[in-house]
Length: 256
Image (cartoon, rainbow, N blue to C red; front, side, top):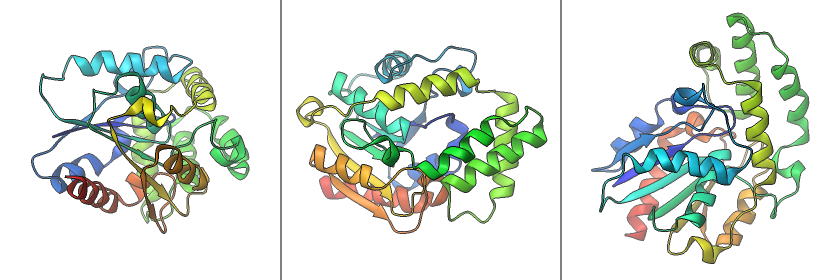
């Protein structure tokens, strides 16, 4: 069994932290693969498309090069990564057996002020205008972490590490704008379009970035099981990776 992990807005595979290792250890015999979205991480020198569908096509082209015939794959995405995973399963429903999305949303199910809470907008604008020096980047990452996490006691250290990620593989403002525009226009596909993929919706009750009602509506739309973390923030894989990995394993075991 293999998992493909997709990160969210202005994030790359190193931002998963310990979650890939923990998920692989939690699910016996599994292998976890992370691919960056165009314009981020290993793909930071490339341009990001304007639509979720085009992002899917870009990532899938790279994924097909590593997939082998007969392999059992699952896809897990966070926020924008979840939107990409949903679109992927609607365009190519036989690529994956299971679809798991975390703290995601869709324009046809939730209003914009649910998908991005209004109180985070000023902080996002301030963080976007910070300078490019390493010290400024640390402050920027810390400001974002305060919006997206609730359980980490080491945010200062995480911010320093993530600022180094940005210095090594910068994500351009153009990529951020294109990703935001793609996410803004994303429409969840019909349940029939992703059949026979099994679906799990995961959300954080204390998500102060995206209203958890977005996940509730996605679960209803897809007639899927929903699991809710009682305390974590938007970046659930960073806030509580052990809990998320355990929920994924338990869900797969139950479905099996």
